[in-house]
Length: 328
Ligand code: G3I
Image (cartoon, rainbow, N blue to C red; front, top):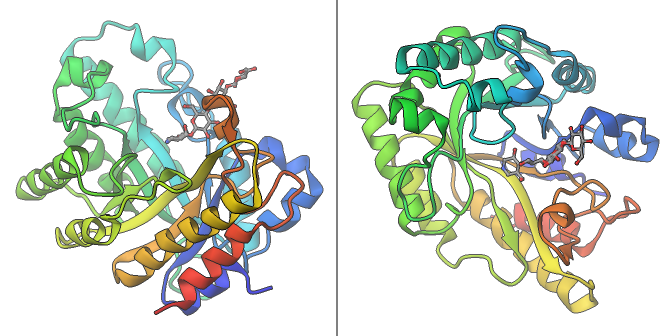
């Protein structure tokens, strides 16, 4: 077998990776594939570095779950993407219900970001120049689909200032980590991706550190936007790198050979697009097997979104990824 990370690197990309959770490490067949650096050169914690996991009460930090993923990545020679510093979801109640005034919440954001980013600060690994931590999703899902800002506790208290606060804190904490804004429904052109372009432009104008745009890519079989390539290029034209950070392509069940063939084609399209854009540095799937996909619990009657099935056997989508990287 080719190995997805191997073909990605042969195509000039930095990595092909996957999200994971430490609870799944007890599953030996899963762990074997996860640890195969020819398949995955990068890991993202699906939940372990989120606010509820890392600062469950104010000023009390716990890194045990995230450390398990960082340790595995180090052992396997895999890069790490940090996920995430500021997000409206999976927030502990002390943040959402704290009724903090603006200066207090701003300092809470700053402390949270700088503490977790410092904890995972890049350590030189593997031969020479690779840093164990490649990037952080500092800001996650700050926009609505219509391009307005999401009215979460951060925006409602601080307007957009929390974005610069978080990015600056992350830069100070680990100057070598690439700092990303990560979102969904920004794969193709539309009001949300345009709003993100404007946000990045305005951050750059204010000299706020921003290195990358994370394109989540939770897609639907047969519905890959036709404007991917132009939109990816519009992002990199801003002078930032991009990455596909949470790829999965779900279908309405039951799975059929036709749906699997379309899914293969759709994976190939996404990979080809990243491959065609020099500053698209890598692709991460939001777990590689249907056994642990978040999709069925979030979308009734949908699933089978990953390149490996629930028995950890490769699906046609796997070859779609390989073909996408081999096409130059
Ligand atoms: O930890 C509790 C556990 O104590 C409890 O028994 C169990 C019962 O349901 O729930 C557990 O929490 C779950 C958590 O995952 C950890 O497993 C939550 O219910 C569940 O909602 C949560 O789902 C995560 C989801 O983010 C939350 O929005 C998914 O695993 C995770 O894959 C998903 O990841 C997000 C990215 O961070 C951002 N982009 C979208 C992506 C998919 O939603």
